[in-house]
Length: 393
Ligand SMILES: Cc1ncc(COP(=O)(O)O)c(C=O)c1O
Image (tube, rainbow, N blue to C red; front, side):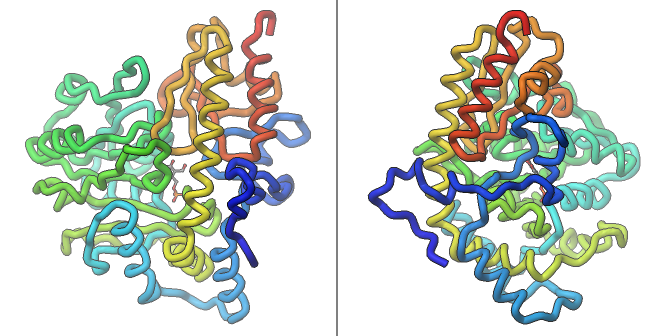
């Protein structure tokens, strides 16, 4: 299948991101949330776009083989990811450091058990992707929320809040980098300061870098936490996946980069026997994405930038709403507290648009919009958003 873009067509009209299959009735978590109701789903973080042709071809080829027995990490998996990390972020690692895992959330859950004991604390910046708040409790550990500080245009680290939050029971810092939902990309100075802090308090940094391939601003670079020249970086665990970038979440394939050999050996046991092997289609898709997905990824970013500007313009025209321009991700975090609407999520759903509810991220009064859908759908959703917050709604 041909998938490269005709350069004569402006990138934002790229058919790969405008002609999308109907996802209703496919078991889609996103689309089946409001059955029978006209609510445009702009919530859970997957995209409405078909995966790139080279990925679909790789899956088909694996299907044609026809045998789907127990599958170990193929020898080509780690080198494909290591090559991708070097090309994307200039991060050189030994492929030996890479261990596949069925999901980044699974990886986080493993680290909670591997690096902390019962009742120990896991620190994280809030607002944050909901499993960061719920997983520690499921593992019998405690989540400690360290609020980020909203400055005029972005969320930044509140160092005083961090210094106040840490206790002798704190064992892990879960970093979401780039940050979901705010879209902040942490810079080298902040990461180094965080590394100093982690070292001082004996914390292991687990860095969820699932969004690191979707940087929207020229001149903003993703610096993997573990790539820092710092002792805390050498102890860190990095979690990555092709799932956000190439829309493969349902195939369940991610990876942990663990340079410490002792932690690496403990990884499988850390899953407590609950973590299944990865399916062969997930491996095929991941490798193809890392090796052959970059043209599609670049075209996607052109569309996502356009969508970000549409959302920011629409939000700025709605009195009382404040949007934070994300440096990365296809998510826009919106403060609705100035509208006087008591339940922004309910108001949006009543107006026919379904964002994520800020309450799930630890911050009521906010919503998160997912822009990864065809442009016309996003524009209609933005009209509904305006209706949700218009007077008398
Ligand atoms: C920060 C972050 N981590 C992890 C995930 C999910 O990862 P996985 O599907 O590999 O468990 C998401 C999905 O939105 C996410 O935003």
